[in-house]
Length: 283
Image (cartoon, rainbow, N blue to C red; front, side):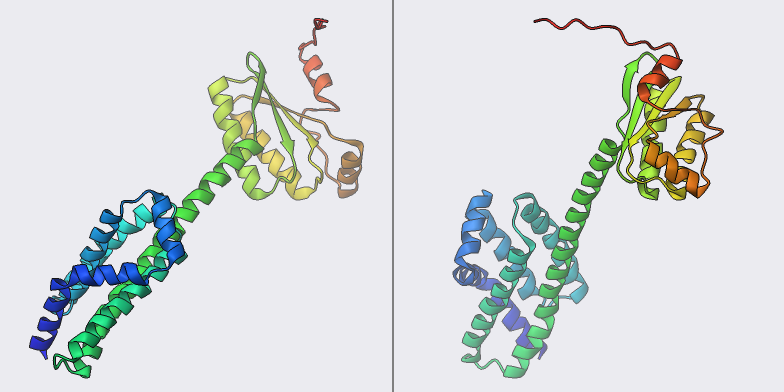
């Protein structure tokens, strides 16, 4: 049996170019067009396919661990290029099935050369797990890429959700809009501390006029931000508490007695001597 697997594996390797051509013939027209649109040279794609077919052929007579190492290296290389060129995971996985079909057709030709059906099944037990491993590795690469993109989006959103706006030397404003949940509170605190240090702030005015709902959790999160800033020597002033929010806080028994507050940002700035100058607009 070993000799028969060796013979079949060597036959696959020696006919790898023909099998690769069959893969091209079997693949969907839409996928072929997508490959052209990706900018990849067909010669390079064919080279990668021939390389894979050789690995699959060699797996019939090589140690399985060695074949797995080659498969992982091939999958990493080709998978990263597929992601870079915008080829979808679904299309990449569909192509793997064409390798199965092309190799099966080659097997069928070999049956006429007295290769037993048992050896065919035995060879597929070696090849199929390798193709499955490629599918798994491709999936892992695409998931990682999606997670990386989501992380970038979340980072950008976090930065936008806590914009520190300097308005004068050592003075800045932090307008908060929307819900202040635990995750966002942590992000706001990180940004506030970082920017306060960079700008060497003395005052940071936290305006909550855009916060629609204020409850015990949100007020606690704001307290955490203020206390962290206080340890850095930054005086925080809470502004923009709307009447309906003040009413809700009163009903909940929440007060900001130990925190400097102001009804409006304009009033808070005037309280520290930051006056608004008249601006004459050109006609």
